[in-house]
Every structure is written in structure tokens, then in C-alpha cells.
Image: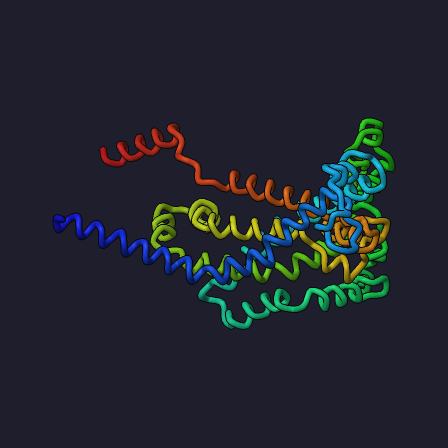
Length: 364
């Protein structure tokens, strides 16, 4: 055997040894994830396509396969289960639509604020902004119920400005419907009131979040912005200052440097923040369970809480599991869509020609 052959054989043997060692060290974690994550997910998938009633083992012979009946009851049958799921989806969609942009923008603003070298006491402000994120969500919800009660501190502050605040967590009126009623529009056109999706009319889909859900939206922005602030802060501290200084030398103002230089470099961090925020908003449960439990008039009902209520309260275990898997598909689809929107795009030929023309003009 030649010397080269011996070296190749030794290298391949070394790689096989490293692979075996890697599998050996990761085997405990893989086993734990398999037992406590993969197996429950597979069992829940079986429950979603079976008629298991919650007693005994779902793998027993008395449990029958029903196919997509549980999914049909939630999505297409048009009964109470479909309407409840449509209502929960409507509520959660408005929650996501408002919370994700607001918490991302606030987190980025706070990160830029506490990252400035001229700010005194930066450590104190970082801790203060992050503190709500490490506080128990149950404690925050109880505090929020007290602050936003009819005679709470929020309505007390509003009364100083002559505003009669609502009974926040007991008001089912949609915010957009309230705005429209203020200009004399109390009912929608027939095209919106007669048509709909999942048992909910388009007019109700466009009602906006209820006043009760608006209080939850404010709470979510308050409690989660601190965590995402730290992610943005870590991203800002990893950026080099040479590109920003070059843009400054070219005459770019502070807004142009942020929009054209800083923000594009924060794209990986922005994707992480948006993805975590999106997943967290679609899975909101503990605040609803601790607070209103879907009231008033189901305007704070969410798919996650509806899945729990359907399975554990109504004993419809198959439908509860079906709602959970539908929610999983929704999260995956939105995550993939978000990844596609934030992907790295190649520079267009038009811009390349413009850069080449500018470069040639500078050289000449």
C-alpha cells in the first residue's frame, strides 16, 4: 500500500470514529426527545384521526380510525365547532397582526436606545426593560386584570383627560367596528355580512380585535419586547462600524444609515425575532387561561385555548388534537412565508449597471 493510500485510510477511519463518538454523545438526547416529544406527537396524531374518548389507552382495540372526521368537524361541517374555530382564528389573526410588528419595532427601538455609548446607566435600563420578560405570565396577567378593570388605574388615568374608559376585559366590541360606528356605519354591506369563512362573516372578520383582546395585545407587547431587545442588542454589538462610517463619509444622514446600512445587516436577527414572535403569538394560551378564558362573547378565544377546552372540558379529544395540528400547519406556513420574504435576494441587473456606471464615472 502506498503512503497516500495509508493516509486516506487513516483519515476515513478517523472520520468514522468521530461519527461514532458523535452519535454516542447525542444518543441520550435523541432518546429523550424521542420518548417525550416524538412519541407524544405521533400519539396525538393518531388521536386526531380516531374516536378516542379520553379513557383507557388510545392504542386499545376499542378505539377506531375515523379518518378526517375530526378535521371536517372543525373546518367544513359548519356547526358550532367550525364557528368556534373560525372565531378563535379571527381573534388570533388580529392578535398576531398587531403584536408581532409592534413588539419587533419597540424591541429594535429599545436596543438602539440602550446601545448608545452616550446613555448613562445603560445596565439599569437594559435590566428594567428586560424585567417584564422574566416575570411569570400568570402574575403579569393578574396585574393586568387589576390595572384594566373598570375602576382600575388605566381608566383612572384616562379620566384625567376627560375620557370614560371601557370595561376592558368585559367589552366584546371590535375596535374597527367602534371606529366605523363613530362615523355612522353600524352595519356592513350584504357582500360582507352574508359571505364568510369558517362560520364567521367577513364583516366579523373585519371587526378588528375586541377591546378585551386589545388589552391582551398591550400586555404581550409590554412583556415580550424586552427579550427581543436583547437579541437586537446582541446583533447591533456584532456589527462593524466601518460600513456605517463609510456611509457617513458619503453624506448619509442617521435615518439613511439605519435604513440602508444597519437594518440590512440585522436581517438574521430580524428573522429570528419575527419567527419567535410569530410562533409565540399563535400559541398564546396561559394569559387567556388565567384571564378571561375566551370571554366576553368568545372574543378572546384562541386556537390554543380552544384546543384545550375542546379536549379537556368538552371531552372531544379528537377535535382538540385536530385543532392543535391545524395550528401547527398554520405556524409552519407563516414561518416559511416569512423566510421567503426575508431571503437574500440577488442584486438586479439594473442596479449592477447603475453601480458600474457610477464606478466608471468616479474613475474617469
